[in-house]
Image (cartoon, rainbow, N blue to C red; front, side, top):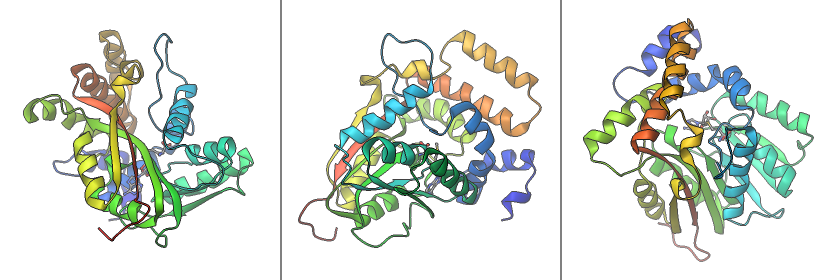
Length: 300
Ligand SMILES: C[S@@+](CC[C@H](N)C(=O)[O-])C[C@H]1O[C@@H](n2cnc3c(N)ncnc32)[C@H](O)[C@@H]1O
C-alpha cells in the first residue's frame, strides 16, 4: 500500500474503517503526526506522571514518567537498554543523559528515526544513543543483547503484543529486566460498556485493540518472563488531570473540532474528546509494568 500518497482525508477514512488498522496505516499515522506531536507534546510522546496537588500539565510530567519507569527497574549507567517504539527518541536521549546508560531506540518509521538522530545530536548524547528501523514483532537484534527492554505507550499499537513479549524475552540477557507503561482497558466494566467507550479511542488513535493489564501479564508469562507485575496508574497519580474529563474541556474540544478544516488534526481533536470521555467513565487507564527474564532460563 502506497500510504504516503494518501490524502489526509483518505488516511483518516482508512484508519477509521471497521476492523483493525494494518501496520502500514499505523506507521503512516506516526509519520504524519510528527509536526503536530512535536508542537503539542515535545519529544516525549506519552502520558505524564501527574502528582496530586499540582495544576495543569507540562513536559515535566512526561519526564517524571520517564524517570518513574526507569527507576522501577533500578536502571544504572551499566545497562544496555532497548526502547521499543521510541518515537522521536525523547526517552532514549533522556535516559542516556540522566542515567549515563547506552540506549537503542527502535521505530518502524524512517522520519521518526531521522528526527531522533537529529535530537540526539542536538542534546549531545549521540555517542550513547543509537536508533534503528524495525517492528516490535521481529526485533532486529541478536539473542541476549540487552540488559533492559523498555516501552512507553507503543504496545497498544502493536498488531501482536504476545509476539513482542517473546521477542523482548529473546533479546534480554539472562536476568534482564523489562519495564514500561501503556494505554489499557481498565477491566472495570463488562465488554459491551467497555466497547462503547474504548472503540472510539482505538478508532481515533490508530490502535488495533486495547488490552487489559491481565492480558499483558498473561502474554509476558507465556513468553517466559517472571515476576510480571502491573500497577494501575490511577493508584499512583491523578490520571484525570492529563485528559479532557470536564464538560468545559469537552466543549472547548468540540468548538476546536468544528473550526478545524484539516481531517488529520480533526481526528486528533476527536481523539482527545474520546479519550477524556473514556477516562471519565472509568473504562481507560494507564498500566505500568515490570518483569524479568530468569537468570537461569529454559526456552519457553
Ligand atoms: C505514542 S508513540 C510513543 C513514542 C515513544 N515511546 C515516546 O513515549 O515518546 C507510539 C510509538 O509506537 C510506534 N509503533 C507503532 N507500531 C509499532 C510496532 N509494530 N513496532 C514498534 N513500534 C511501533 C510508533 O511509531 C510510535 O513511535
